[in-house]
Length: 435
View 1 (cartoon, rainbow, N blue to C red):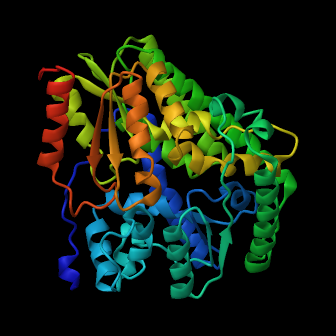
View 2 (cartoon, rainbow, N blue to C red; view 1 turned 90 degrees about the vertical axis):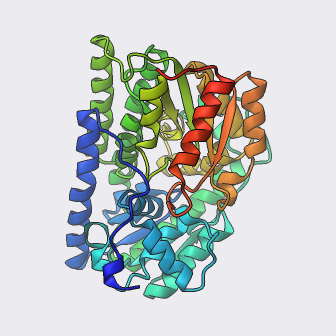
View 3 (cartoon, rainbow, N blue to C red; view 1 turned 180 degrees about the vertical axis):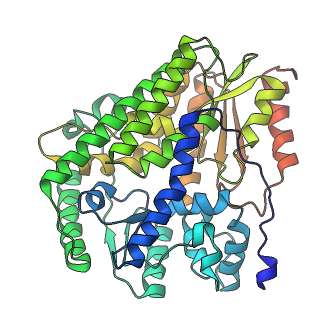
């Protein structure tokens, strides 16, 4: 493929940013990334990590890191995914490979990587993933082979019991929520990761700094809970998911920093100000919708069409919901508390009834009228259990529309078809007429 063919073809639209905090958060991404590239250029190590890797350890050791799925989202938002994924397919990899996790690897095949987003991804020093699915393990193994860097795979465990209301137990009763053998194994695995990082990067783990990082993450989660709860009880909604998705996720990848806490606090204060002033994101709100699944990163403006035409407002996404309920951990043993943060992350997101019970709880608290569930068929985790998710909502009397599309790959996206499906759902299932 020639350089002249690299002009991105826009298959979606960016969302209109209505919050100052959102603009600050998204602008910071580039500033931070360029600073990271400069650190790496001066000889500092760089870790490529998966989303479910304990980034708090890297933060405590002052090891710069890039999250695999974050880079995928950036590439998709910059409309680079079709080009990168075509490169991956030209290497012989199948087209139905999980794109959300493999897009970052695809960018590594670019013959001109410096033309990628913000000058491209620097070469990593180490690669770390958890063995939560076969694809992720292989993707990181391929990263390791391509760049000749060591790969550290973290084990994954599964529950043998079904908890009741995990979101109530997670912050302080996590020893009760997660079986001891799961926490024991993960603590030992984290100790091994620390030893690996000290050996490969020359950085030293500081328990004092680690405790500070954990406290900052808890403070960030506190503001996220306050924001989530405020949106849930306010009619009409002061903000929509186009205001919160990136505003929450950018600081999530910066967990353990004062900047991330400040952004979470700023988001809450800005939303509270809107509520106090009686201002709504969509004053003619008729329907409150829930978006279940990953964000449509190449087309975040998709949601706003339905706000304007139908008064159908997407008020909930997994990003703020998880940030509110899944991250806070309090206790005297910070490493074991961190193990509890990640022991059940995949269960909470992808395993019925952990995810189903939580989704329904969130739907009821947010006054949700209907659910739109994005299913990425290439992702075994994201596509698994979707029958039970739909059944749980419908048993609770909440209609569900399932859309099949990839959150980062725009190549097969047809905006008119997807828009027509959702409009038909609004009109026939919910009886909503265009404004």
